[in-house]
Image 1 (tube, helix red, strand yellow):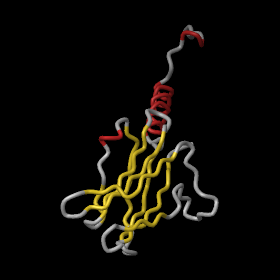
Image 2 (cartoon, rainbow, N blue to C red):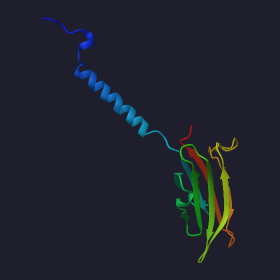
Image 3 (tube, rainbow, N blue to C red):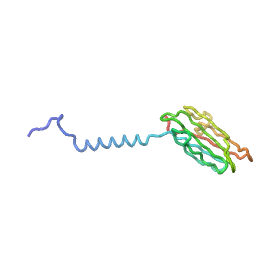
Image 4 (cartoon, rainbow, N blue to C red):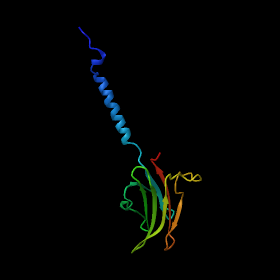
Length: 147
């Protein structure tokens, strides 16, 4: 009986399974790659802080602000298709008939943590006060998923 030469042998079933598993693992690893994410810890009046997450957006106007206890609104905008072009943070005071911009901050890459801040925040801790009754809002933001 004549044996086939190595060049004409068909790969075994096991080799096909290994190749398929390798392809699946590479696909899963690529799908789970971290995307940039802004994570902001916000509290009003020294109360329990809440964490809000904001993702990268192509259109800054499509990003919605979040309500903070009925008195403030907060919005984090991370713009850029691929690498981050800039990050802008907006804090508003809201009363019964209007919304007033209190604070706007712009960060350009790389948004790195302050060397004196142990929270790894790129903003540090910010304290803002409403024009009515001096209500206090505190926030601090970190950036994850960037190289």
